[in-house]
Length: 432
Image 1 (tube, rainbow, N blue to C red):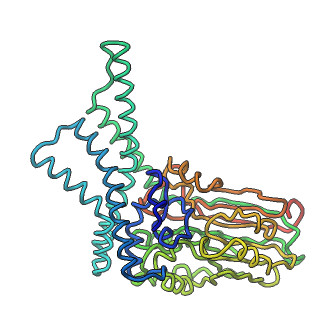
Image 2: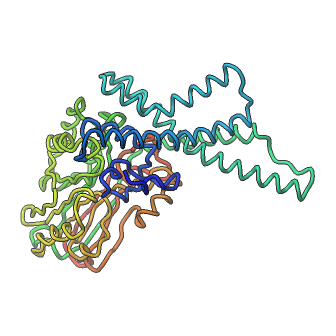
Image 3: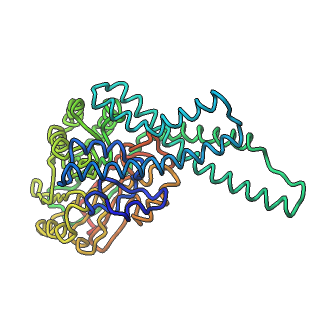
């Protein structure tokens, strides 16, 4: 792991897994201290061809970094708690013990899972990741309270006798607000939206008037998102009656050893033009071979630097997650589809490279989650200037970035609802 990967702003989301390769340097959503679960998976399914001793050394450095950063968030929150509510005796011990337990909960969840205690692992993961969402908001709120303290201090210098609300009232109000936001975030995460996009093109053959493509992305099947969630997603996909189903990466988020039956839910949808998928970064964290096996059993044709012409109607081009191929290689792969038909380009992360522009008609991608939890979208934007939705890149090429279908880390979304995307490609004027 390079030193520069540690020197990131506190909430600039990066990935430990990519840091170990030295290639994957622009992951936006994942912060180091949220990556313990996925990093520990790499002990068994490492995609980095280094010696075991090197992995253990990197793991030790990462865990220290995780404990320092995540511990700092808790320390700030704890300080604000003690200002508002004096803690003594057993109450102090209980609060400190609870905070320590929450800091360690991702590792505890992973240990339970590896020992076959699936139910306990799920409980630990849900509580621990939900707490992550809470502590992020609590940290930001605590910083705001420090600003209030500073404002109050300056105001008293200018206006003796000036005072604001007490720490107890402010902290109580803050926690109430956070719980309200968390509740809404859980509700938002479970309410799947359908985003619709219509494109007109002259690149469909004369016998085809319309082609409907449904995109899913960033489902993150694993310890939290399972049967009920996936069943709901696939029911909604089925209702849209797609001609083609595509998945733009991060279908899985961990070991699928005990979850292979979930592939049946995806396999039950069989569009006439097939199902296509590309890898995301989490397929590598989960163990690429196992992830690919699950995707194949789900009925997906996995495109890895490949171009395919489907029924002589549409080209579908897919490449692996960024950092594992060059932009030149992606452009070369797109060049294989230069036959005059509409070209659909599948990639996990938005590809804005000039080498690829003009070689496809529509690029579908995901990865950004649009930050998933406001205000983290502003930090994501430092790495990805385009976060969501439709964008025209040049005369021929357009881009659509999904907000994602599932959640990663905290099982909540705030001001960034999950989606499946329905794209209707219609033959006629008005498009490329």
